[in-house]
Image (tube, rainbow, N blue to C red; front, side, top):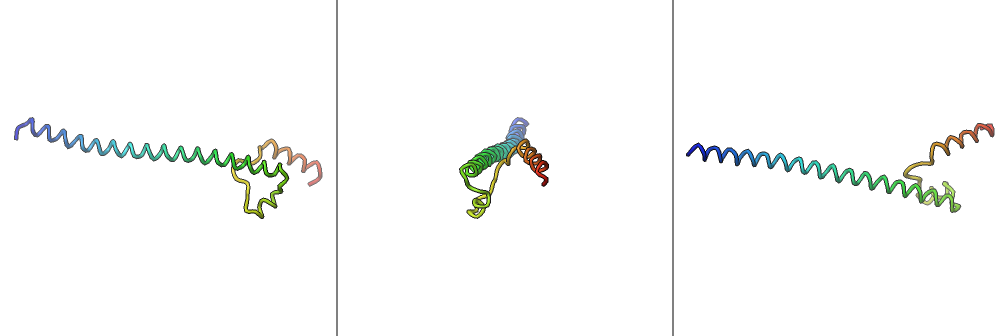
Length: 95
């Protein structure tokens, strides 16, 4: 075996090892990108669900009625400003 042949063989093995390492990094990046995409989609679905729930309330449904139908509010709740105003209203009415 010549020195050149030994070097080429070592380089080939090194490239194979590097290729395996690179592929594992690619797999991690793909999985993380997929997870990020799903989290973004879930957040959007939660926002839309919350919006539609509030729309149902505005259309005359009560929370109790919706709950009886198995529908609960998911997604972002009412803003803090609204909650703070509700607290003030409760204080002024003696609650």
